[in-house]
Image (tube, rainbow, N blue to C red):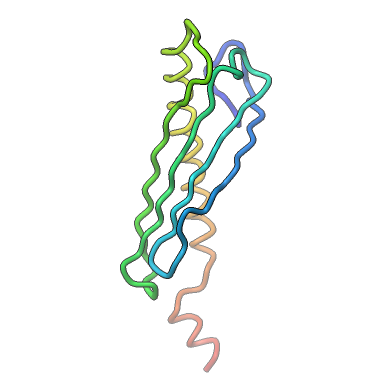
Length: 120
């Protein structure tokens, strides 16, 4: 992950582990466990995210995407407030970048009308 406006750290090597809690025609529920390394106090915390992607109609081209996150502290530290603030801001920035990537990829997918015209 790229970190902006941080005096000491510019890049944070991050491992993301995805756990699929639920998957069917109408919902995908993912729990994401993030672990960073090579940054100050990285052994004191990790972040966890929960993504819920839902669509009431499996044939619809639209869905609802809900993302939540929390900082989990494993050790006590005097920098808890600063760590929480930075982790939340970085997660929001990374999620915004991810949404832009998804939207760009979705725009490349042919629409249903275009598919039927190609087949004709």
